[in-house]
Image (cartoon, rainbow, N blue to C red; front, top):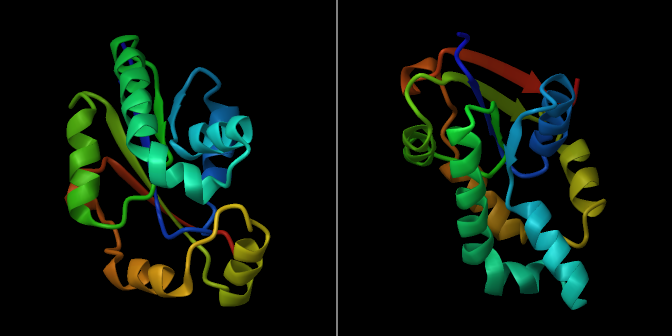
Length: 161
């Protein structure tokens, strides 16, 4: 029996992680996608509020809901695509501990090396703003992933190319 797969997407905001997740889902249509943002966007739509306002009040609840769904997906031995911001080795280690050890662990390091393209993407998503100082803090705290973190495969994808 083949090992199920975990595809962990890592990279800064606006790098193209969610676009990569969609492409992976096309290849793995039975995969479970761990992504909190869609839940928050839907909540914002239903409540007629901004994404930011909903994030402030509902992020923890959305993450709990996603973890409950993850549990069912793991019980069913479905492939998992993890599309959630994870900037540090410690955060990625926490994610890896949530998934059974027999899952094959694929790291997709998604980056956008073109600063102008990152800015264009930021401007294209006004409903999900990240203040420049917050983004700068994310950049400075980002730890580039590598195989020593426990991945079976590693792929770096530059979405600017």
